[in-house]
Image (tube, rainbow, N blue to C red; front, side, top):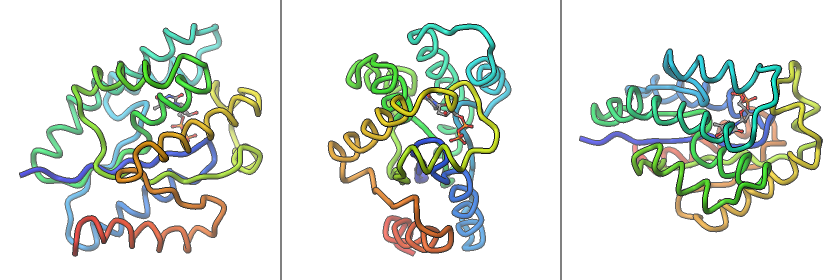
Length: 203
Ligand code: TYD
């Protein structure tokens, strides 16, 4: 038995965390077993890596940064995601490989193809079955942020490259990535997400 792997993606402030929670509640209410996770993080080891990545006061070299995100992903995938999928759970992950491609590949300029290949190594070849990309302008996304972290402190130009990176991933992989308008009202977006997921699970 193999469950379903759904990831949420988007720039900072796009509303992923809220929608991931609402989707988990909706699916649980319909009798599905849901494992909800976030990246970076999701396990004890990965949460410690998250602290370094988001709140370190020291400079982090872009390649070191990428490898830390991937290290967190490798741990999360092995310890939580694969076992949950093997038990037939629906796994909802707040960010996965597309974040690395968008932020490190496009934002930091490390190259989308290289980052995608390294991320596949980290996940042992696992990719989401469905990715919900909440698209939003960086101006709107950053305006919604209350507390900033190391990534959110980057200039607007960085977040523009990240958004462009996401849209180009969606263009390359339209069967997996569904683009939704993150500027919409929370409830409207929630309905759209439920419809997309319902189509995939067929219940
Ligand atoms: P988080 O607070 O979890 O995201 P959000 O603010 O969207 O809820 O912070 C994660 C940050 O790390 C976010 O700015 C995106 C960034 N990130 C990367 O740069 N690369 C990655 O591979 C991942 C998973 C996240």
